[in-house]
Amino acid sequence: MTAKQNWKPATALVHGGTLRSGFGETSEAIYLTQGFVYDTAEAAEARFKGEEPGFIYSRYANPTVDMFEKRMCALEGAEDARATSSGMAAVSAALLCSLRAGDHVVAARALFGSCRWVVETLMPRYGIETTLVDGTSMQAWEEAVRPGKTKIFFLESPTNPTLEVIDIAAVAKLANATGARLVVDNVFATPLQQKPLELGAHVVVYSATKHIDGQGRCLGGVILSDKKWIDENLHDYFRHTGPSLSPFNAWTLLKGLETLPLRVRQQTESAARVAGFLACHPGIAKVIYPGRNDHPQADIIARQMKGGSTLICFEVKGGKPSAFAFSNALGITRISNNLGDAKSLITHPATTTHKNLSEEARAALGINPGTLRISIGLEDADDLIADIDQALNAG
Ligand SMILES: Cc1ncc(COP(=O)(O)O)c(C=O)c1O
Image (tube, rainbow, N blue to C red):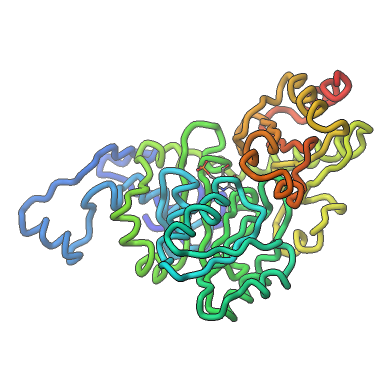
């Protein structure tokens, strides 16, 4: 069964891409196999030549992984996808597959720590230069372009951890005018709240580890784009470097997709309530929440996002000692650098996800000693707020 284009997201996430075997199973099958057998040597030859459809080897493609890719395409409105073993495998493959020595990349400086390592440290080793810019300044994007050399623009929005929002349509327009391709890491928005391809981006990447699994079980990622870009750039890179997703993890992620709209809706609703509570608390210096009118890019959010976020960034008064005391006093929300889980999780970015940046680089991104990032889970919002209240008062 192929994905129907006119399905609403909730339907596509339950049925999209389903590939039923002859047994007629209700739940998707896990094809936990490395290879596939051929009836004849001629059939093997034909399949390798691409003259006959069918699977060859699970590093290239696998039926369970194929279902996950097709379901993601149905949700994202993308022509094609490749699922990867982690979000970082998706980011690095999406960037590296088309780049060559001498090319130039412009990236927003507010990136997840590992993404920054890929663009700042790894790519220059292979002769690919990168310019990091303040992603909220269109002038900065324009000034960084090197005509003929800039091949990729890369950004995440909202950003990790300060939930800064970048005008994707404006950056996509500039990318088109300069002949570059825009790659968007859409993890924090989720595929439900923001559609980068509709805004003009060329490639979208996800860490499926986050909301798509949504229950803290397995790592995964996915790259989505048009079929031509995938055929010409990603296809061979993917086959021969092997960032493939395990069929078991693909199955877990398929099950995660079925409940994604319910979870993201509930988590966003609870996050808005928690953000409202934090904003009124005297122990809190600042709250950044996409969905609140006081967010610095509230106008862009209204244009490009369909809803708020499941994450909140906030700053406690009293710096690192207060941030640590508050985190340690929490009884429901657990300390963890992960996000998008059914369990609420809190992290202190300066000492965890962004510890490799210099203090100046952190300050430029608004990551201060008192900054905390909370990922709201599926617990009752009243319980979360009561727990946060007691932890703030305990400090
Ligand atoms: C914005 C962003 N991109 C990419 C990743 C990497 O994902 P993974 O941990 O699945 O490799 C993360 C992980 O936290 C992230 O927050």
